[in-house]
Length: 355
Image (tube, rainbow, N blue to C red; front, side, top):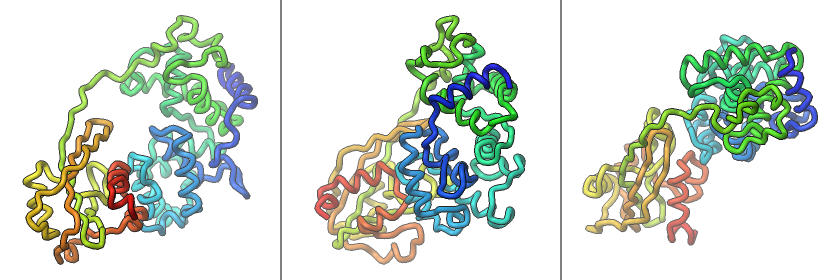
């Protein structure tokens, strides 16, 4: 075990996070299922945000077989609001594969585990290290930041060449003993001390050997992602409320934005929206009321949605023949996987608020 690992583990024993809900279960510490679920949820998401979602999912789906047997709508509903919904669909698909091919368990073989949907080298390594004490290095965002600063690595960590250098450092520092604690420790250090902005170098156990600290460049490393201009996408959301105050929702395609979730129908402009709405409801000649615009930022673009609403419409039979469309009450919407911006819009409208 090198000095980096020794200092880190000593710090972890005194200052690390030991009470995260996926670290302990009533009968078994760090079960593979709980570790897997938490690691996928933590991809691009903070611990404080993940905790209530993790608790909600394990309460409803306490093990891998329960997840595999669940309906996709239930999985997406439990995930609703956490974002990056492809992670939920990958979890569901991976659970089914584990039941079909691995006896209902996560494989302990690195190659088989990393081949599951949504699991790459780092996440698979973290699961095996945390749940089974198998020696595998990890390189998530927190670890990249720690190693970039400690070794003074230049360049954006997402670049292939830079990632290769960081993987070499990660492999060199990962110990054979206490690998689970080490894995949690280096993630904790990045999340609580060696943070993206305003790193607390005075509390860091690695500060004396850290290149960035010695050079006064802690806030300059790692190098940021090269700037790119976010394009803006415009859409008109179609809000149809029938006489029972049910809202028409459509299931989104399996590819693209919000894959597989139930959302409002959308169109490119108001005229197209009205034509599309008439397929499902008698609008009674009404042009539709314009609601406040909804802005939502994705990784690669910004969405500006202009909702157009009709109330008390008479729904047509066309929905009965469309498996990807349904009229939903507010209670049903709460039980479905619905994108957070859409759910907020439906809940804040006067009719919904009065329910």
